[in-house]
Amino acid sequence: MISAATVAHAVELDSKIKTLVPTFAATVAFSTGAREVVQWHGSQPELQVVDHGFMDMSETLINWVRRPA
Picture 1 (cartoon, rainbow, N blue to C red):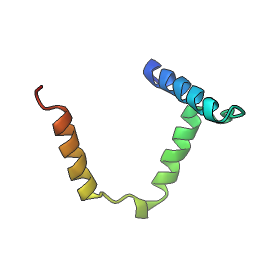
Picture 2 (spheres, helix red, strand yellow):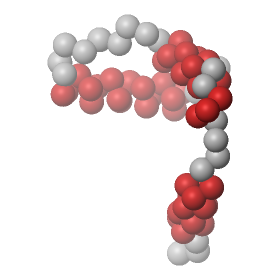
Picture 3 (cartoon, helix red, strand yellow):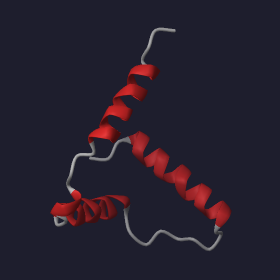
Picture 4 (cartoon, helix red, strand yellow):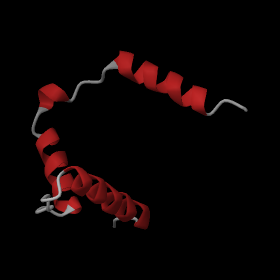
């Protein structure tokens, strides 16, 4: 199930795209596109590698954002 926040974000993104490209019209539903991306990624085992440097950087950023004010 898609949350209301996800739908609101998709609508806002669509609006921003249309500002840049007025003739843009989404032809694939978000749920269909997301499903296709997951299926494609699942079929590419060579891309399913953990980048430990990126993971460490992400943890550092998350901890920085969550630090006490």
